[in-house]
Length: 431
Length: 89
Ligand SMILES: Cc1cc2nc3c(=O)[nH]c(=O)nc-3n(C[C@H](O)[C@H](O)[C@H](O)COP(=O)(O)OP(=O)(O)OC[C@H]3O[C@@H](n4cnc5c(N)ncnc54)[C@H](O)[C@@H]3O)c2cc1C
Ligand SMILES: [Zn+2]
Image (cartoon, chains in turn green, cyan):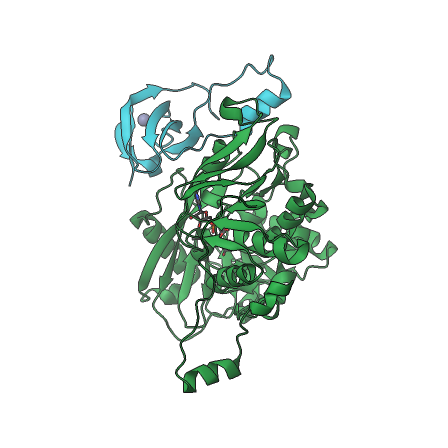
């Protein structure tokens, strides 16, 4: 890849030099004029779209690629998530897939030459009921079979890992045990978006922000305007003009159905908001990520000392990204149930992002019934951790026009074949 | 919070209700092909705009009914309509 030499390297020495010479930093990626033809158009400039573009160029030498986003890069879920990564899923298919993503995250800072601040701090999923204990045990066994560091631990051990948790037995939701997953942790999501954007750009990929796709152009399909099964994609119509392309990849998460309907491909997806909130900074006291399914809440502490909280998705489908008071109230109640000591903490911010929920809590990936139209959607509340592996596998899927083995279980056709990949037991609380 | 107008109980908080999602007509289970049935079970329009959807008045009169709601603005239009009598729509 000749063009990769253009990538200006970040280093401590470089920082020092620029500091003493008072040099400003150059733009990190180009703002090229939009061409009328590309080999591949990727819709959505989140971690999935950008990673797919990067691996298309770096692994397959396909760099006549445009990534278009209606807003700015990372404006969707990729810039709104709570940054948790883990691979302790429930199905063997899920575990293998998410574990490959953790591998890629592990070497990302070096591979992309950007500090993604991977904090491998360990991940606790609390069980408050017998049935939850059973699910945790099941997950631990599935995980161990695939060499994932994951085990069931007792309340005393939990207290050692996270001393602020209330493990007394006279509470409404006593802590009976937890699934402990040491390789889980947090990663700075913005750095991942910018890292992939910068690396894709340096390989020649064109990034077009403020470019909204209004229609997906097709021919030969059985539906109106040549869309739908049996047809093929010929390009996209955007608010900046038409682009001709034989391949279009939908990486629009919460908006996935809207875009897919433009190609005449209905999806098994409904869009729900997921909310999160962050407190004022405090002295660090919470070393691990803590999740409680029964209480619909999870929490981690940032390096700056803020507590980041998340929950389950709002139950009513909507494209509205406003936070609600109902969320804040329920969240506060549930957090205090776990950590009574936090009652004086103040919330600084709360926000929401759109999640593309599937019936089985697994994604939808690969080719569709429209030739050249690919999807990488259904990321629900768990797609940040899957960004790298999805990009890698979708790039292979597009380059070879097939469905790679690792993502074969996630094909759209599983819904008409009735072969679902049920991850609800490992993914229902959003993170 | 979204105020949901139950045809029996009048406006109630959405938290008193059970949201049952997009309303589509159910194919005849004896006549439908597997594909038609699974399409009905899983595939959704999921529009950003007006949607006809099923609600269940779970903490009130336990009636199923249908609403027309705008999924971006939260507006409602037209009075609620009676929905299917069986649960699990
Ligand atoms: C509050 C919250 C917390 C979360 N926590 C976690 C977590 O801890 N761990 C985890 O793994 N996952 C988490 N997630 C889920 C994760 O954030 C998403 O699954 C992931 O970011 C999806 O990435 P993406 O690149 O597919 O889509 P996005 O980042 O959502 O990007 C989609 C892009 O498509 C663009 N777009 C939409 N329509 C159009 C159009 N018509 N034309 C052009 N562009 C368009 C949007 O502008 C957007 O930038 C969380 C999500 C939320 C909301
Ligand atoms: Zn009622």
